[in-house]
Amino acid sequence: MAKKQFKAESKRLLDMMIHSIYTHKEIFLRELISNASDAIDKRYYAAMQKGGEGMDRSDYFIRLSPDEEGRTLTIIDNGCGMTEKELEEDLGTIAKSGTLAFKQAMDKAEGQPQGDVDVIGQFGVGFYSAFMVSKNIKVYSRTEDGEGHVWESNGEDGYTVKPFDYPTVGTQIVLTLKDDEEGEDYSQYLREYTLTSLVKKYSDYVRYPIRMMEEKRVPKGEKEEGKPQEYETVMEDVVLNSMVPLWKRAKSEVTDEEYDRFYRDNFFDVDDPLSVIRVSVEGAVSYTALLFIPKKAPWDFYTKNYKRGLKLYSSGVMIMDACEDLLPDYFGFVKGLVDSPDLSLNISREMLQHDRQLKAIANNLKKKIQSELKKMLDNDREKYETFYKAFAQSIKFGVYDQYGMNADFLKDLLMFYSAREEKNVTLHEYVAAMKEDQKAIYYAAGDSLGHCLGLPQAELIRDKGYDLLCLTDNVDEFALRVLASYEEKPFKAATDDDLGLASEEEKKAMEEKAAESKDLLEKIREDLAGKVKEVKLSDRLTKSVACLNGEGGVSIEMYKTLSAMPNAGDIPMEFVLELNPNHPVFEKLSGLSDDERKTYSELLYQQARLMAGLPLDDPAAFSEMICKLM
Image (tube, rainbow, N blue to C red; front, side, top):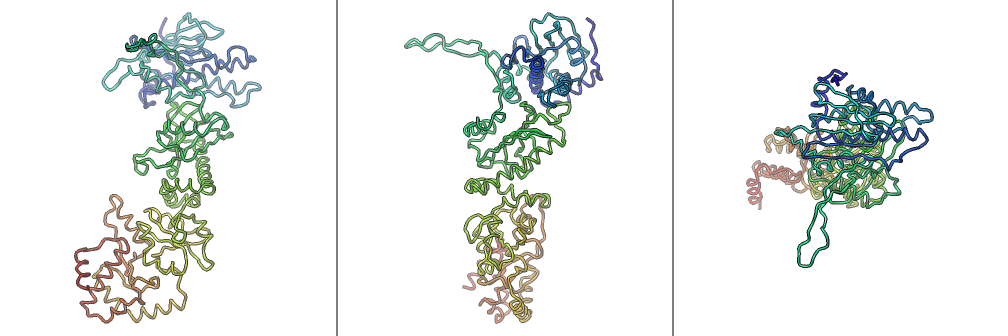
């Protein structure tokens, strides 16, 4: 029979699909299994249209049959089969999808609910992925009402279709694999282990059994005493896929133990999940999601190498192992999957379009995760504390990131250590416990709790009985500055220029003292030889003699964080030394000689650096000054 040419741009288009569209050769098996599942669906739905006569779902199957010696892999199904015309139109015309046409026809059928037919393949090119691994493909097929035919092609110069007495209804695809070459092990697709692994990875939830004969080593006869047990190899027909996804079963039918086992097996965690979130949505975009919140952060979670995202399925067939677009960065710790029949895929199932369906799912999941975390915070504080210990930085970064775009969405998930309560509190809990005369939410930032609680700048805040939030993560202060306020209460850092705590009389008295001490303060600034921009009196110090602050809107803790970043360079920072006019040391300064005052000025400055968590300029010189004074 004369060879026929492909009808759609011929070899150029086929070459593009084989060599460019699919990035992983192994997915050819997923595509052929999906096509086989579709064919069975067509036969089953057609039987339903005729009143349900014929086989039920349990009679259908897909079979894999590898032959290492002959270098062939055969995929068999007992689906609807194809006529000679369908073989020419669906396999001879690239990107012509018989499945799509069938679905459209069924959706229009009288009494058939729109969109009720759930078939996987609608895009018409998956079959041709088999040419990535095959040098020849034969397709034997027969329909219930027609004769058998065989379609054959080497993928280069067209195809042939001729009559063939195929004995049963269905389709048999025989792939003759390419010869192995450097860097390409095509023989792996003839090995039982590889085929089983690929079915588990991509097609585990196809609704029909995927069967394969496997070699099993079994005992031969009864073991004789004193002799080693003899074994023999037998062929056993096994089902490779589990068929029914856990997330498709009714919630009442799935136990906590099954969820835990599924999580550990699929996401390679030794611990059970902290929480399970299950979502099922029917509507403009229908999908099912099964999400897990881990107990601990993976060792690489806060590195650029961490791969976040959810597994993405289309009607039980895995499309992507980690779809990043389904999760915002701040919820990147969530593990799980989404299964939807409504996602728009282009000519390759592994290439997902950024369309409204995907965005709608992502937006819904984001809200659901936030809601579940808030529910955990309100109803199971101990569990939420475990979560927060592992992933607080991720939530805080989400508040700060993108100029605070998500700050309002995430603010109620935040917690910080309370100096008064000596435990983590939410912002709402802090505000609810504020004293009547308190006008702001006060915080101190440092590299440890001890550092925050010991800051001289916080002395007046605590003396007035106001609570102090301790911020010990690098991102904390950035997050609160972006948030700016909570429940109409502004955030105030202990290091801010004006804490709003002094009365008008106290302010006036401080101004008078500053005027009296103007010359002394200028001399101290000159003593420090450009180390500080300004020396001034402070109304926030009640016990300490001195403290060091940053000039302008960048605090010392923010300066340290920015300076530690890769390629930060030399970040400019001007310091202000604040002195307590009521401290005995300050009173002593005015009666010192110039040399003595210079020593005291340097000592106070270096002491303030230590209290601020900054290194000494010269530890040896500082030690010598201490010894000299002693």
